[in-house]
Amino acid sequence: MAKEITYHCTLSEGIHARPAGHIARLCNTYQAEINWQNQRTGIAGSARNALSLVATDTLPGDSCRITLSGPDSDSAAVALEALLAHLPDFSAIAETAPGHLPRWLEELKPQYQTGACISEGIAIAPPVVIASASFDDLLAQSPQQHSSIELEQQTFATALATLRQEKIAALRLTEGIEHDLLEAHLAFISDGEFQDSIGDYLMQGQSCWQAVLHAADGLQRPTATFVEPLHSAAHAGYSRHRHANSAND
Image (tube, rainbow, N blue to C red; front, top):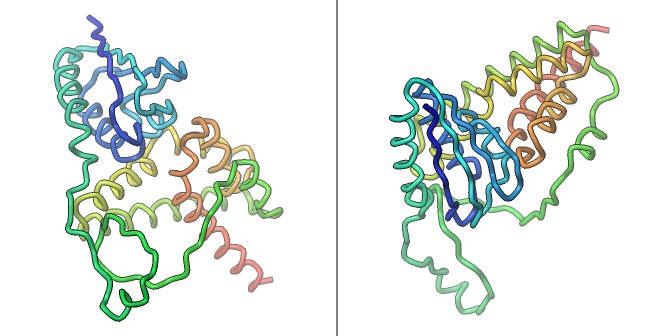
């Protein structure tokens, strides 16, 4: 018998990568099909799929209808309701003592803002404002030449495996928010539906660059931010392959 849950989003940033990863990991421990529909946008997606969840564009204040059907839908509903109730706790950032400037710098009376630290370390770099880019903008930057279907498939597979290994290795060295973000990235690049869609575009003769972007666009534009790591890895592999070909010509 189907079960239904109504979820009112209270997360300050909505259902983005981190909460979507938590939800998808839980839902994938059950056999039930779990459909998530944002009542505001009308967009529906599978709660077992982090990319699909992000694509519902669930924002603070949105009401969502979650339908569960399958042999273990009752137990899945209980577990999911418990998780949804605790999602704000996962997103909360522990309060830390405000930072302070060195005395010699304080005497200059600069105007500055402090932020929440998510990982240890010191970085010195000029600030850069990066404007958002549309899929059309990114596609316009696609290299005009690309390899055969077989070589593009090989390039994509190599880039995907390398990126996954890097994320898994980084997970062992992190905790807290940084760990959650890496888990979310790993969920996205491991998504079977996303990979299948990329494979379909590669079979049509598209380059890795084009295939990743078209597949992401097909999963709704809200996912654009989260395909960047995979797109960058595929592009890096593509560039290395083109360089090797040029050297052999």
